[in-house]
Image (cartoon, rainbow, N blue to C red; front, side, top):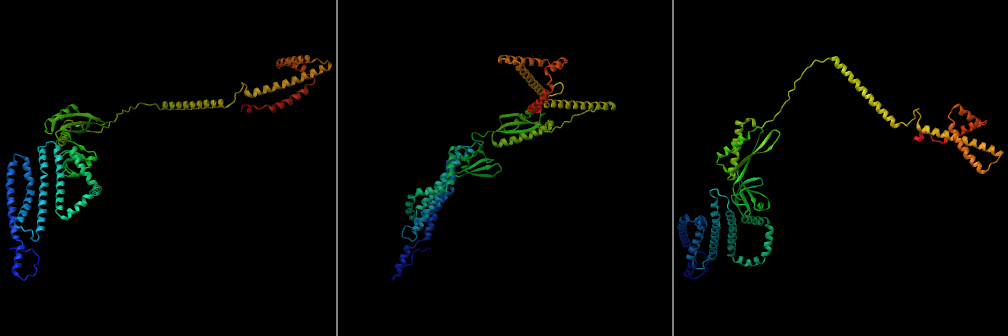
Length: 519
């Protein structure tokens, strides 16, 4: 059976020649399919034989083993594409057959895709080899993380390379490649701005792979979540949480924000168990029980353990236990084991050490003695009287003190001292004026009889003044003094007395009062 892929022949007067041309330009599809099928079967059979040999050889060499395992799908696709291509070119030798270029181009693209898939599958061989180092519970290996990242990088590289190879099979794409390369700078700038976040995560993934802050299998705490690093890619990191969930975070999260890595150097960890107990807990027996529990379990690695009282309050004290374990899983089980067993031990062996609240009441004994009511009433009355007296004495002392501070000083006779001084000054002034007038009158009478000289008058005045002052001192109010005063005063006593009264009035007017003087 054959199919003819040719344009409609032009009318030809010679039918034999037209039939001959159609037969020459026709394509035998059944022959092509048969040849391609034979080639595919032969190549697949050869691949199975080679795979069998590689599997037997791979028992001694892990690299061959993993290469054979990763080549099953990609190798099969490559065998199919290669067999179809060989069958096509074996059966069709004439390039003028209609559709020859299209089918050949399609087979070339299929071959590029198959080879690209095969190479992408082979990129995982290095990761498979390094992952075996995690078997048996060994610590995370830095090579595993780097192999995983290189696996992703090589996959991207071969994928991009295959896409470019397919594009270059088209003549139009080859022609446009020149202009694309000419504007590669501008395109790369625009692409970098548009894919800034993606590029940042990619560079962060490379940084994590080669700076080794985390590795596949590390136990980390990120954003309050504890888990194990399961996968590291170029753009994100997968964390396997303890409850079988997966936490996926961008790679730049681990380069820009802090996190905890519990297995950076090794997997050994220390765990803390804290118990609030009463002050009466026997610490010696408690430590012996902790040592017994640790010696009976395989969860403790035997490196370190301690029991300490780290805090205390009014009612309880805080007992802190520290124990070591080989990894985080064993440490969690060890902490739960110690907590459960110690609580049981306290309940059975030392129930008085359980936390409790204490309330103590004081016992007061009341003593009733016989009391005389009359005596009590008498004492109460005396106490009231003493209180009243004390109050009155304090009030009197306060009033006296206030009066002493506010009242003006007085003489023993009750007259204010300032008024007394003012009165004496006024009396002396009146006496001086009166005596001065008497001396003037006496001198005038003598001067009429015999005028004295100036010096003698001056001496007389001085002596008279002295005699007057001396005589004034002798007027003490006695009968003899009154007689002498009358002899000195003479018949003009009444006039002088009137004059003295007027002078006294004038002096009283001019002299300030005692109240003003005090002010």
